[in-house]
Length: 213
Image (cartoon, rainbow, N blue to C red; front, side):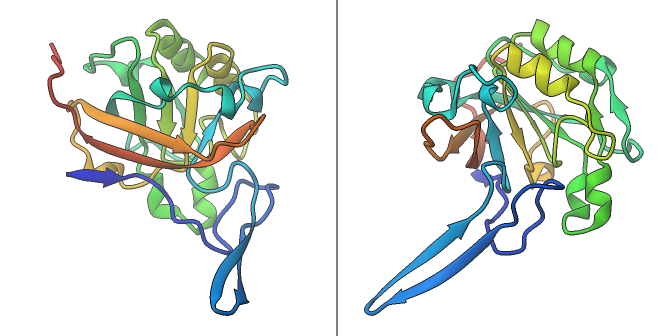
């Protein structure tokens, strides 16, 4: 079974505070129908490229396809209070290998379209550094940001993107994935030239032929 972990794009959807609003405007050219799209590069479920933090960093169009698909695992960090900093201890009991995607399930997606969504738990600097040391290829979260949205800051973004670890934010439906199970995780961003980020379709399915030991 294939799982879609992506937010639908529609007018008026939640965006990170200060980002451009999303507008999908149908245009009619009988007998054809097209739509005019207005949105920021970090709207909905999206991929952050290193250029999001570093002006001369890798852009969306520089990311090779092999970096966008590979083994991944869900880590449950549910039950933490609003704006809680997540530390390295949340990795205990999980076997992470170099090249994995690590998806953090905070459970905060239940607050989508509510003010509480901006007060999600976030990845602290020590946890980000632990992920760097484990040489993961991608870090995802079911929230606006890997950093605190209400307090600002950029420690997680800086540490991960400096080390060419991609970031996916605003994931959803992570509760459909089993903990401890290795999935194939694929993230397909729009191919924006020089892009700092791009809306993405993120899919997961059970991996085959992968030794989890």
